[in-house]
Amino acid sequence: MDLTDLSGFPRLPDELDQAVSRFATHLDTQRGHSAHTRRAYLADVTDLLRYATRHGRGSLAALDLATLRGWLAAQSDRGLARSTLARRGASARAFLRWAASSGLVDEDVSARLASPRVPRTLPTVLDVDDAARLLDAAREWAHDTEGPARPAALRAWVAAELLYGAGIRVGELVSVDVGQVDQAERLVRVLGKGGKERVVPFGIPAARAVHEWLTEGRPELATATTGDAFLVGERGGRWGQRQVRESVHRLAALAGVQDVAPHALRHSAATHLLQGGSDLRSVQEVLGHASLATTQRYTHVDADRLRAVYAQAFPRA
Image 1: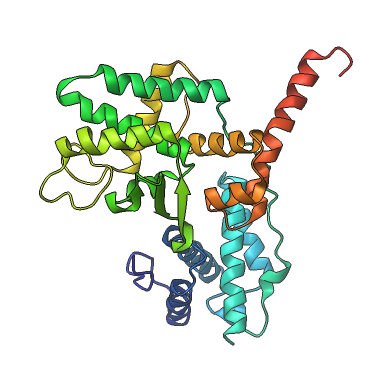
Image 2: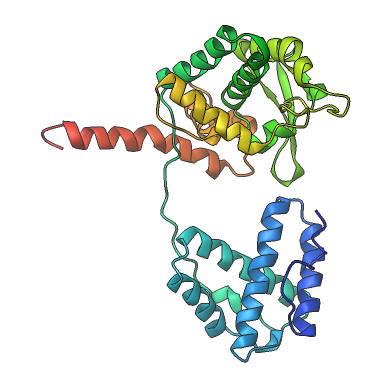
């Protein structure tokens, strides 16, 4: 994605338009954010500058704290979620911090901009038994299905096994090529957020699914134009994230467990690793978290649920 191409964004006064273009070039050199995040920053900054222009602040020097607060307040009035407002505030701060460091403005007025407090939510997690039921349902579906439908069942099984067994993200899963899966060592190499590569182990059940998919499922779907894609769709192209989500929802229904999205299998893997005695640093490496604080939220899952059960069941709670 070329982030310096701003053709999809509304036009701004020349000074602001040029500033956004330079900011886009700056973001394109930062490897800590995904392309999706960087694109969102540009959309947020453009929206801020359009708001400022409509309110008589058509230059960077004219931007002040009141304008920033008014912009966020207007979006809050539209009913945007706190998480969205927090992200937009972060976009504005990143832009104005860059503008100040680049000499485009004398002062970073966003330094005094408060962010909405985003309530901490626990990730959706299956317990160990339900996770096992979902994976058993996937394996049984793959082995009970015959004929043209079997490759799809094998694909659903291997996808679920890797989402849980390797704890990888959906986007990472669909981007994997055949050459990135080491069956002998039971390792998969994935490209995570910010273009960071990591190698993740997977267990024996996932290895079995990988072997059957590569020997019996993928050859049935691959075409001359498939290339190296590990997961292949019905038309021979790379399988997409939406199809993975549909597959996991179907497996949850087959297993009779709580309906979950694919990311819940990753959350479940992290929680179960910690329950099993893994240290935080190891789980951080497996999940590819840039910050240990992101991994630490999984340590709260059991404690918070234990408190809820205690409060509900204990007569002296």
